[in-house]
Length: 325
Image (cartoon, rainbow, N blue to C red; front, side, top):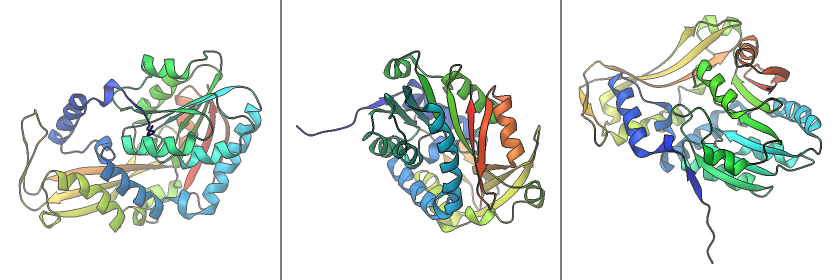
């Protein structure tokens, strides 16, 4: 019989809820991050951008940072039973990297993303090591696991390893902390990543970071949403920049990707009233947060997690944190 993969669809990812969130964001002149990943075509464009510009793919030093943190986690786990949860799993490359080196595979894994295509790509990489479930979850709308997630993971007394990679740049940190507290129990582990920049770089407007976003691959990815709304590239101007962000500790700054419309357009979501974007309207398509390692460590503490180990690449582009509940 032909094979296949069953995808668990969370209530947060129902079309009606996604349409409501999208309409509300467009009314504020913004595009929710989930809309940039949700369709198969968008997930393929994002993967192309990731391969072309992600420090994790271009810099061997970033791989070394992950290897260092994975080694500490692997030693702590030993041969004790554990389960894997990957939130915002993307293509599953890091999960596969970790599983290749583990003495004991997880009893079960749940890989979840807002994009069904990315959840399936991650499932393909993780499933050779253990029974793996793919889920579609909008963590912005549903920070905690639904009952079906807990049922699939089972084993209340087994420690859980939660991967939270690539999420901090695009998610409000207060909400990210709520997500991690909801998905972990005392004794569970969290591996989180942060896009880094020094305090001086943040103050200067991230000049060395902007080329990673102001490029044709990013435009191709972001333009998918505009094309869906019937907005041609001849009707807008791209504006990439940065803005400072207040931080409790360390330093933070945000890369921004906006478009300014040359003429007015009407955008819409089925079942909702159209939204008018007038000529000269500036629409925020995407943002990505950069932070110092001190700020990243401060996030872990604010989330109620204990820092166990951290590492970064020599260029200071990406940080990897091992945290424990």
